[in-house]
Length: 578
Image (cartoon, rainbow, N blue to C red; front, side, top):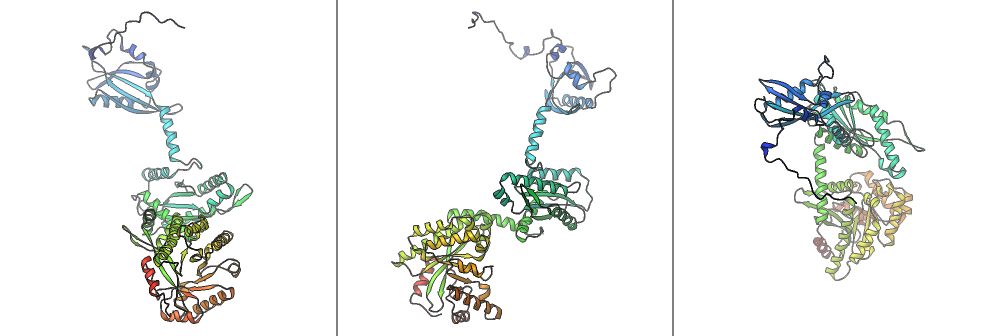
C-alpha cells in the first residue's frame, strides 16, 4: 500500500491565447531540441528563406552532415515547398516529401506553420517532418495484396486493370498499334478439385500460371482474374495474326501433361480474344468482350474472336437471367399444354407441359432462350421443380373441375443438368403427393444426352421413377447416341420421334425410312411411339398407316393455357377421327 499525499501540487494553466506562445526567455533552438523528429525554424523576408535554428534530427535528414559536403538532392525540393507554403498566406500547411535513403525510399509528412511575431523579429516559420516510411511500406504491402492473387502472385482483376492503364500511359506506342485481351478458361478444372482435392487444384493453377508466363512476350501482362480464369494483355502490331500467334504459344505451353501426385493431367482451355479499336478504348470494355468471346469458345471448342454483337448477346443473357430469377420468385411464368393425340382413335391421351414467359421488360421470351440461360446459370433446378409441381397441380385442378380423375396425363420435360444436380425422384414424389394424383398420370420426358452423360446415375433415377409408377419417355429420339443395349436395359416406355424426321418425311425418302425404322425398333422392344411435329392431315394419316401410337403438333393444336386445355379435352371427349 502507498500513502496518498495529503496535499496536491497547485497546477495553474496559462489563460488565453495571448499567453499560449513561445516564451522569449527560452531560445527557439531549445524548443526545437525538445522535439524528437526533424524540425527547424526559418525566417522569410524580402523573398529570402533563412534558417534560424534546427535540431539534430533535421540536420541528419535534410542538410549536409559535413562542411563542404555536396547538397543533398532533395534539399532544393523541400526549400521550394516551404516557400510555396509561406507564399500561400495560410497559417499552416502540410505536404509529403520523398527522399532516397540508404535502405530505399523514405517518406516524410511535413508541416509549415507561422510562429508569433515578437517585436523586431522577421516572419518566423516552424518546419516539422514526421517519418512515414513504415506507414507507406505497410500501405504498399496492403495495396500489393489487394491488387495481386495470393496463390499465383499474378495481378488479380483489379491489378490487371491498373497494369493495363500503366502500360497504355507510360509506354511509347506506334501510331498503328492496338492492344488485345486474351481470356483463358481452364476446362474441367472443377473435376480436379473434386477428384484430387483443393490442394491439387491450387498446384495445378500455380503450374499453369508459370507455363502461361513463359509464353509471354516482353511487355505482355498475365493476370488471374477468376477461379480458373486467366487473361493476357498484349501489344498488337500486326492485327489478328499477332493475337493468333500468342494463342499458339499458349497452346504450346500447355501441350505437355502436368504431373499431380502420381497422375499426369493434360490441361485443356478455352480461349477468347478481343482487339481494341484504338488505344483510347476503355480497357475494361475490351476485357468484357474477351470474356464474352471465351464463353462462346467453351461451347464451340475453338478459339473465338470477339465480333460485334457478342457483348450485346452477353448483356441480353444477363438480363434474361436476372429477370428469370425474379419471375421464378414471383410467379411470373406459366405452363402451356399441347395435346397428345392417339392416332388410331383420335382420343386425347394427355398433354405436354411447356414453360412460357411474358416479361414486363423483355416481352415474350422464347423457351429456347430462357431454358438455355437457366441451364447455364443453374436456374434450371428451380425452373424444373416449378414445372413439375405446377403440372401436377394442373391435373388436380382439372380433376376437381370434372368431379373425378380425368383419363389423361401430363408429360414433364427433364433437363440433363437438373438430373445431374437435383434429387429428381424426390421432386416428383412430392409433386404427386401434394397434388394427390397417381404417378401413372405424370410422364417424365428426358433426352438421350441425359442418359449418355452419366448412364449409371440415369439408370438409378429411372428405376426410382418407375417405383413411383411414372411412365418414362425418351424425347427427341434419333438425334442422339442411344444404343439398343440401353433401350433394352432401361425402363423406358415411350420413344418420341424428333420433329426433324417427321415434318419432311413425305418429301424426303431417307426421313421416311428413319421413321419406319424407329417404329419397327419400338415394336420389337414393346415400346410406344409418339411423333412430334405433325402439322398436316397428310402427315397424320401417313403415321397412322405406319402404326404410330401417338402424335402431337400444330395440326391438332398449339400449346394452350390451362383452362383452354381443359375445354379442348371436354370438346373432344367423345373422340374424333384423325
